[in-house]
Length: 294
Image 1 (tube, rainbow, N blue to C red):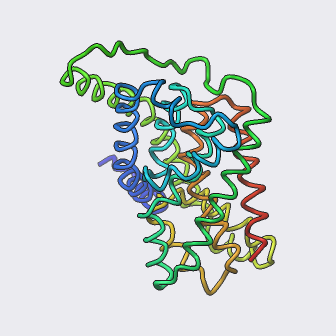
Image 2: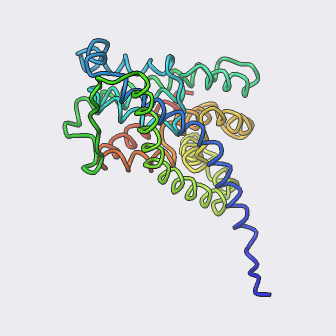
Image 3: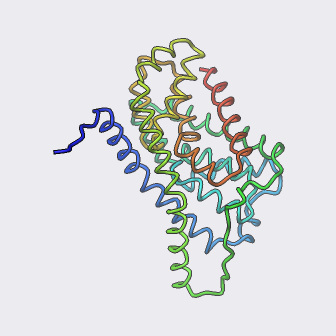
């Protein structure tokens, strides 16, 4: 009797919002579980033994950890925050955060399949991720000296003289706590991404980005807006092959997993604004310059 008819765009936004959440939740869950394992089972002494003391070597070492520890950008922030709280330099932690969603084998194989079983784009994507992450990591190593965490971000110190069963229980407790802490920012970020996708038409962006310079900026903007998981974004990028240059496609494939709406929300909730600003600025400039090489 008093039914309200909502505009079609609202239902479209709702569908996009739910699809982003469904795509991201498994990776966020995996990320907080890994974070819990690091918190309970990994000691500061373990990290000190494997992490190089030299700042630049530590950044380079961390860049390649993503090959061994596959992670999506949806769940990488809690993992990095836990590693940094255990003694990993923030520059190395950020380098790992930027490369892990891209250079892990699952993402590179998906890129290979999406671009017609051609390794060229996958290798250029991995190379771009490594170059950008090393440069941004070095920038932070020498340009950021403050504490990385926001004041309200607390780390719990756990007494380790516990049974294995107790440690497993504490790991799950920590994962649940982290999930709800990060989950609200995932929801807010996904909602913003869905709204922008609904009301900012892709065709408008495509029409703007026809020049060699503007096309890279447009594709970077598009990757930020779409907020896709890195396991799936190559299939979207491949659909633009006839419209955009190789360089702009690489801008999409490298920038998106490093900086998107939901990932940015999580970073702002965890790290200080100045650090996040340095990360976003460094990634934007280096990805753009890398894309101009192609």
